[in-house]
Image (cartoon, rainbow, N blue to C red; front, side, top):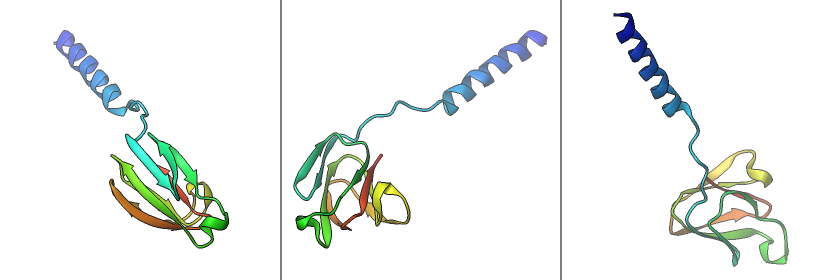
Length: 101
């Protein structure tokens, strides 16, 4: 009986470690286009910046296999404006940012 309990306990521990261990981080496959600036296999946060070409907004082309999140402010902080699904185009205000999982 004690042997069976030990085996069950070991299996439960192994299962918990498998489920709770973080997965490997990987970039989104494809390209992120921010006003013509291409980012291959992007991952992380991208600030849109302020320039002559982004006076009002930045065009965001999501040609990746992941949905991306738009933020009104820099560094992907603050309120999320929305999500751009894969293979679609959207817009983010000048000075905003884009998060790619």
